[in-house]
Length: 272
Image (cartoon, rainbow, N blue to C red; front, side, top):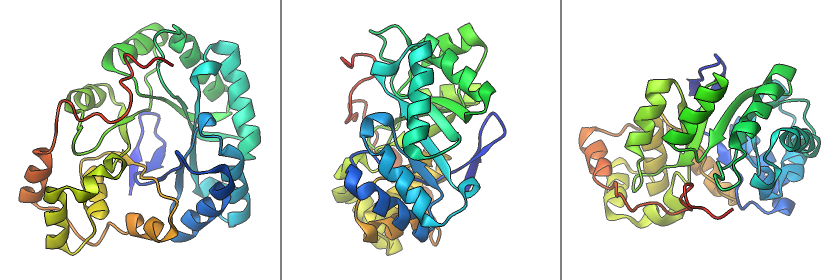
């Protein structure tokens, strides 16, 4: 399953998120994920595990061109020259010659540097260090600004998105501008796994709650990067192709959406 981006490149729709994966465990988890069939890895400079991810990639025996690797520039490296340096540092830690996707991790509007940072990502793509470029946690206003000032539309906006916070207005903006939507915290940081609606659908299909929620993301056309450091969960989260949600299932999940369902920081007010 792949999503075609606005630059013509394809990204595997289901990947492994590596947020909160300890540096010492990252290599083993990456190797296990690749052995289980994953071909999309999502990390970030601020996660502190890029070196471990690079080690896992190097030791897994999977051809580089078969793995889609994403990382992100952190807020303290925003700005044109500092972003160029941050990208080089990430490539070195990951032991890679290029990144498949590089993201501006947060708009960090108080810093006032996200347009300069976006210009640096454009330059990195032109240099061949990065294949696709995008952003994370941007709202419509920030997207309009970087598109308007540079003429370059992000391939992806990675945002908090799960059944309790479905972000339909922002997703509609993405669709109108050709921006793919990628879901972080797709399982609501585990809080959805005990939801009675999700649990009921899981029983109906003889699947786990996590599989039901991941299937929902994929059916919605979203890119999803559930995280886990448990190897048995790697296989479980990846095994979502043998069943289909029906209209009543989708309607029930649509009903879980809440205006106050955000779990993580609000990008407009985050103090970093």
